Length: 193
Ligand SMILES: Cc1cc2nc3c(=O)[nH]c(=O)nc-3n(C[C@H](O)[C@H](O)[C@H](O)COP(=O)(O)O)c2cc1C
Image 1 (cartoon, rainbow, N blue to C red):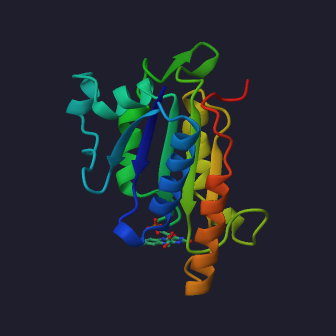
Image 2 (cartoon, helix red, strand yellow):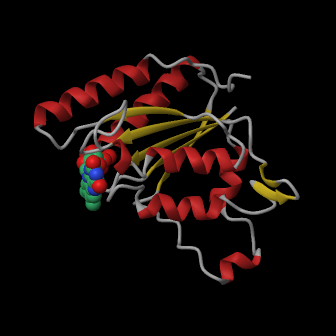
């Protein structure tokens, strides 16, 4: 079984999303010692922006091939300017490919990449979840859910560290809670039917 681990935060060792995504991968790896992990750091090695030439169906890009091969996908995804980092957007632009991960039919779009377990390690300065007053400003988590739904993955799991910009204590507590949630994850590599 294969796990694809992606990080997109730009704050290096201080990154909350990176620490949480690492904790998710550790938990799955200890439950499944033979799990094969591929790691992509989108800040260290950015995926080039999509270009007109890239749309022409040249060689299959690494992001697409790695995504298709993965049974489990773990993504460290900070909120930047209310959405996902542009590094992560560039990755999705290589993964949402007509005829590979989705197609259009007479009845509308159809996802082709179902059956993967997807876990997002989310980090946000403010608080948006669980009916927070700022929920309407969240173009991060609903967007991630939309992208995966579009390729045939109706449910994703999201571990959130929120309010990390409020104070050092908020940040430490949010990180601690998120890492604990990661450690307590069900180690199954299959998505629930
Ligand atoms: C460039 C940048 C933009 C940000 N934009 C937002 C934002 O729109 N909303 C928010 O709640 N937090 C925002 N933040 C705070 C981050 O979401 C928060 O610091 C989070 O921990 C970043 O993830 P990381 O620690 O993995 O880098 C921003 C941070 C940076 C560096």
